[in-house]
Amino acid sequence: MGLDNEIDSAEDRELVMNLTTAYIEWEKETELRGMERGMATGMERGMERGVEIGKETERRSIIEHLFLVRFGEIDSELTTIIQPILNLSAPEYAALLLQLSNLSREDLFARFRN
Image (cartoon, rainbow, N blue to C red; front, side, top):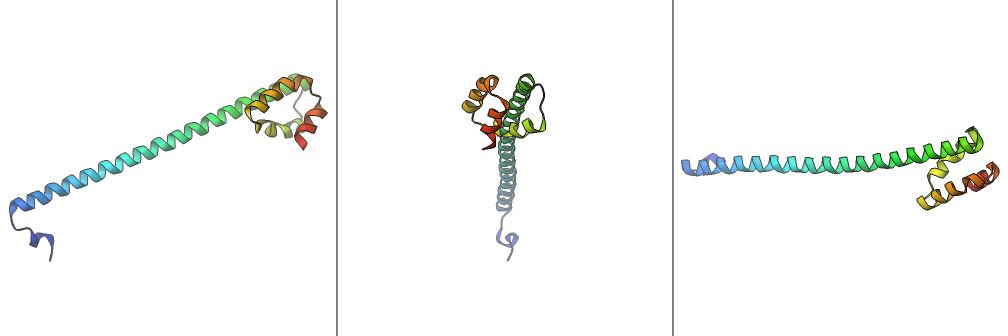
């Protein structure tokens, strides 16, 4: 027995049609809101990741320039300690920058090879 057999009057059929249309519209709006929220969350995460990449790029640039000024070049040996320096916390990174002009290559390597 189908829905059409249970709906006797034209008024009842119209009510069912209106409710069905309202439900379909609600469902589409709900889906759209969900998609918008998902996109906003994804964009927020993307922006956070972009900021992280920007900070790391800036830190790398600073270290490379300081190495060039301090040691005259960035050889393969110096390149190996750049990433460990980038992994330092902000206070440790700042302290290293302040100490860099007083550290020899050997001191620097000893600190980051452990």
